[in-house]
Amino acid sequence: MYELILKNVSRFIDLTEEETDFFTLLLKPRKLRKKQFLLQEGDVAHYQYFINKGCLRIYTINEKGQEHVIQFAIEDWWTSDMYSFLTQTPAKMNIETIEDTELLSIDYPSLEILYRKVPKFERFFRLLLQNAFIAHQRRIIESMSLTADERYCKFIERYPAMEQRIPLKFIASYLGITPESLSRIRSQNTKVK
Image (cartoon, rainbow, N blue to C red; front, side):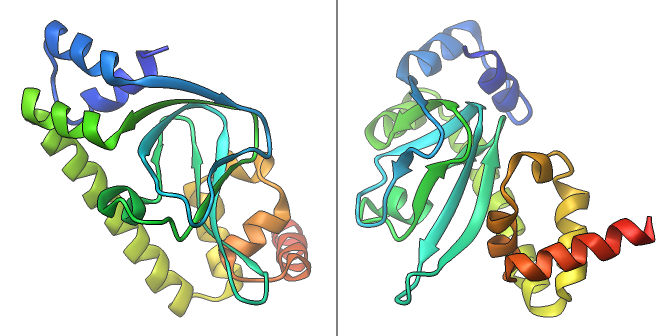
């Protein structure tokens, strides 16, 4: 159950056996079926989640009821509504499973204890936040400067396995286009290959 998360952590920090045991004691496993909410807008995000298995989408809903996918999360990724988690205020986003999903979670008080007992975890989570910030900034710039076709190609290049796992309407929402436009782009790209 902890093999993938410990491998993830080891990319940035080295843990002793004692530190590993302490960390894993703070984690709580959770399983959700497809189409279940992990978090809904208005609820406070009390946890950060590590995905052991499955796929999720993080999205907002505008005043007109339109969904806008902000991010997807798959195995070996961390996710949460970070604004809500860090400020302990109501979430602005929804997190819903696309597939049956298995997670490990850590709550805010436990994370603070972890920082005090194993300070190197501050470095670990800082690096995660830095990488997330870079990815979000890149996504914003690309959404403003690239064509829909270019955004689709970048998505497939970065996340080749996701296209088979995620319904096209969610990918279209992530790219900021209609499902019809995505179908046309996919058709044109297939002809080019």
